Image (cartoon, rainbow, N blue to C red; front, side):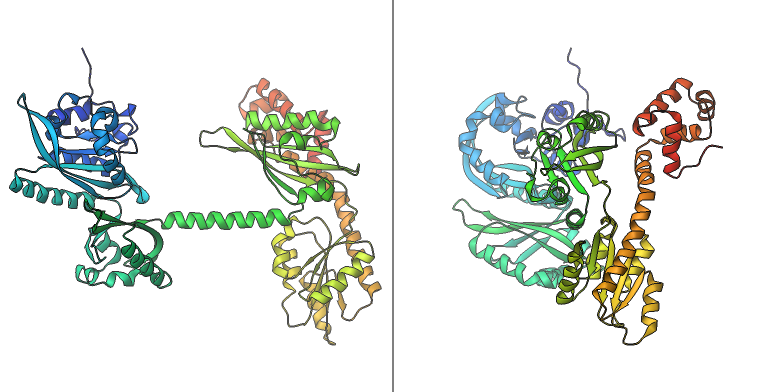
Length: 623
């Protein structure tokens, strides 16, 4: 015996109500096997439409999604005949193939947003076991979905010989349509063929705070943002003239005075000859989406600005195709200048890695791919000129919605010992900037120029070590912001300030207090400038040599998990596997596994070497 299960709301209510055959069929149908999905996941507007058609005394069919899956009411059974109950839940083209040549185009037009109709259509019907012919008018209306989409078509059939009954049913239909429009999540409106708005649903009045008198008197135009109004009204006038659908995005003022972005869509309703009878439109609130898009766009701009000015290489790899999706401009500078061919896939890039390091590099990438770990690996690359660079690469996974690794991304930093010859010039005067650049380049320094303090400060944290030369044209200028910011952010770039003090000794004092390592009054001799820059760079080299080992150790330790850090802390305090296991409430075998993983990640060959790495990173030395 066939077992059926009726759909029951979480509140215990059976839905849809009713004991007619079609209501029972809808309740017991396995909708999960269709494109509409399980009934428990249906949106409320769809349920509202189903309730409406089941309560109707005339034939109504709701055709859903692009496949036009049929849900119909009891009066449709006589029209469908032997196709019932098999037509329920099936695409109408499959359930009634002989009708498709006559009505398929009608359905397609309705699905594109038009409200269309056909009159005096003949159908073979069955009532009480008796077959006969009847004539109907067919009305197809788009059912609005979310975000301005069309969720389906509502097909209503009116038997034409009984005009009085038809008029009554049309009146009922209008009421049901109004109920349907009130149930829509969007603001809904309609207008006559000239574009005069004659209907808004209640959401309009709740959102705008306008009265019916104000809305229908044309004051609806006043809530359009002033910057958008002229263009919107022009586009609307052109759409009316061309009798063509239109879609535009603009801002509408809410009752509290706040403007929010909406997508407005308007479609003409036509008669059989294609003449426009009236207009139907919706406003869909897209403000959250617009803000998210703006935030994403700003984020992408910041990322690109960061990537284009960073001395590190930022990269993204598609794990499905092994294609490199993004490689920042610093790649050419580190990997070999213009002579290097920018790789398009992982294999081409791997060719640049030193042969002795390729196996370790491939293993590190596979570990990120298979275990979704963050891996820091140091390796060598061979440049086209034969030079070798040491690279520290931090590789991390980018997961898709199902939690699988879809992309690998990372930051590759040149950790080759630099000679400390980089100088950054910040000068708003082009001539002065060029003169300073030539002087410093002539002395053998690498020079990068900036025309404003803001441009420099935006990328300062990612610049390689060097000296900053800041040219200030007047003591009144607030260019001392740069050394102040470098000092506040603890960015290790010593600043030399050049400026015209005009005898104001306090100017130089202010520069030094702001964080500058030296102040030179303009004009100054080239020798004095070179002496000051050399002194600043010497301090950088001393610090870099002292801190490099510690920074590498810190980067390695940062890749450890929380549990691995706990085990490492235990080892540094002199703990054994047993004592650490007792303190962490885990087994000694688990401690041993974590210990081996720590040794691997920190590339330590013994416990004393592990302790030295931890001390270099600033961790406490065991007592």
